[in-house]
Length: 119
Image (cartoon, rainbow, N blue to C red):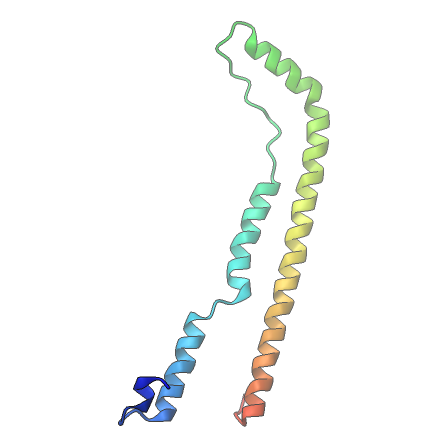
């Protein structure tokens, strides 16, 4: 048993109200952290296909520009696929997080009803 709860002068109703308030303020909603991770995913999915072409070597820049032009179409095609995959993944996770939030809300409502509280 918690020593504070066993001590005289601590009304159970007030302690329960404090516990509920602390739980509400400290509980991490799944969507809270998911949103940040989704933004990171979307940023990572935005692939820059323009390579750096600066060079200290004589003719190095020209070679890099030529290679970039020769392979750009292929790299661009792959980058577009990765970008689409990242965006589709972010949409799926966002929809799943919204569903989890809704289910948690419904479970909390059912628990309140079962305990005899009003919504």
